[in-house]
Amino acid sequence: MMTSLTITPTSSSFGTFVRKKIATVSLLRGLISIAAFTVIWEISSLLHVPIIGNVPAPSEVVVSLLAQIKLAHYWQSWGDSMIRIFIGFIIAQIVGVPLGLFLGANQRAREIIFPIFEIMRPVPPLAWVPVSVIFWPSAEMSMIFVTFLGAFFTVVLNIVEGVTSIDVRYIRAAYSLGSTKSDIFWRIMLPASLPSVVVGMTVGMGITWAVVVAAEMIATNTGLGYLTWRGYVAGEYPLIVVGMMSIGIAGYFSSALIRWIGNRFTPWNHSR
Image 1 (cartoon, one colour):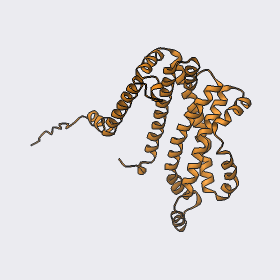
Image 2 (tube, helix red, strand yellow):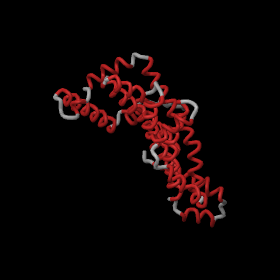
Image 3 (tube, one colour):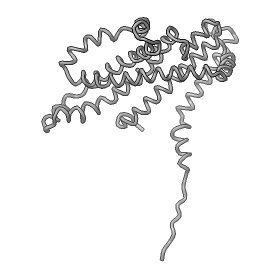
Image 4 (cartoon, one colour):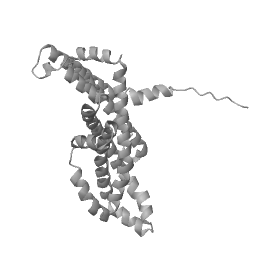
């Protein structure tokens, strides 16, 4: 005698995803804080509170934003800044990640190269803007170079610190079990340094946005940095805030993308 089995879903997968990933308490708290900040900002502007009262009110910023999103130049500024950011950032990772692993794993190379690296690292990337404008053949290449510097030093330093902080007992145990240098690098050093790589990339992404915005104010007439500068020159103060908000949103989502990718490669480094 055969009996039929019926499966009744208790909840939809989409509903579960929304509850666990989107409709979270932390998201609700974030939205409440943003709303409260906006209300306080609006009231302070209406009451002309010192310092805060001089900033354009959110209502004025919204009017300026609605006017900007109708213009093709606004979205072109987004695209140009994004392209400069990601080209410079990707090149920085291609060069910086192997260099950081090499310096962290090789003490002799670290003693030779790292002093030069440490002398150049404290120089702010913004100080490289005039030099890059002079020596690179185009403004685009100079801005990409400055963006590259913003992420390069950060990721290298984080990786070196991550590799050198590995517990030496793991390496000695691997040697005692017959592991080669190649095995130790691929099975111990690289996995152990991945969290440092992710941190360096996340911090570097934030720095690249600060750097490229300053470079756009000097070397080009497109991009979110230039949009903000144009608002200042023209005396359109709500446009300045629109540019600042656009940069903040772009930087937030860029860093969130890096963190999301990093979590996929380091599932052991964070709790679910």
